[in-house]
Image 1: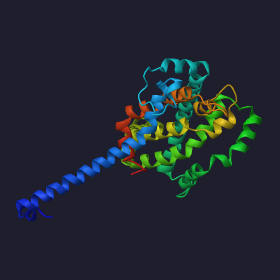
Image 2: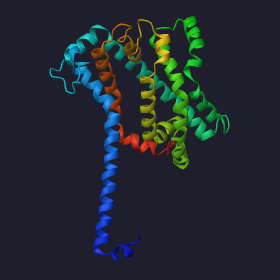
Image 3: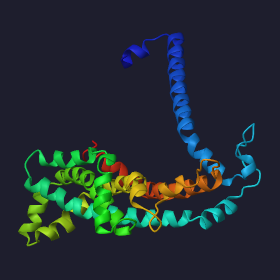
Image 4: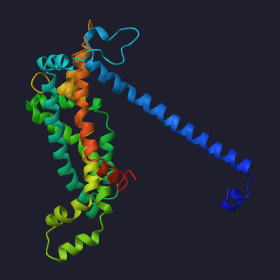
Length: 290
C-alpha cells in the first residue's frame, strides 16, 4: 500500500491496520522465542546436570535448578577418570590439524584461484573428497596407520584430521582469494615484492575474514570428529568424543561426569566463535557461502 493510500485511510481502518501489524510482530517474536527455547533446552539441561547431585538426575518432577550445585565434585571425578586429559588431547590434535590445513590449504587455494591449476573442474574434484563418508575409508586408513605404527599417536591423528580438512579449506579459501583484486597484488609485485611476500602482506590480510571463518569451521569439524578417533586411538591419545562414550556402560551411566565433560568441551568452540564473531559474519558474506 502506498503512502498516499495509507494517509487516505479512515482513523478506524488505520487503527485496525496498526493492530494487524502489532499482532504480526507479536507472532513473529513468539515463534523466535519458542525456537530459541526449543533449541537451547538441550544445552541448558546438560549444564544443569553438570551441577546436580546424583539423586537429582531422575527425580520426578524434574529438578530444574540444583539445590546444592556440586560442579566441583563432578569435576573431581572427571579429572580422576581422565576427562580433562581427553579434552587436552582434543585441543592438541584439533589446533595442530587446523593450523596445518589452513597453511597448506590456503597455498593450494591461491594456486587454484590465481593460476587455475588443474583446470576448471579440479577445485570441485578436491571438494568432492570431502563428501566421502569417513566410514568408507576408515578400515584402509587403520591398516595403513598400523603398518606405519601411527595408531594411538598424536601425529597420526593430526595428519589424518588435516588431510580430511584440506578439501573444505581449499574450496573456501579459493573463493575468498578470488575476491581480492588481482591488481593490488600486481602493484605490489611491480614495487619489487616477491610472490610469497605478496601473499603474506597483501592477499592474506585482505582475505583475513574468510581465513578466520574457514579456521573456525575447520576447528569445529575437527573438534567434533568421532569415528577416526574411535578406531585409531587406544590409551595414549583419547579425544573427548571417544572419552564421552566411556561414561555410558551397559548397566549404568555416569551422567554427572558426562555432562561436565560436555560442558567443558563446549567452551573452546563458544569462546572462539564469540571472539571471532565480527570476522565470522564478514567472512560468511565475502566468499563461497554468499
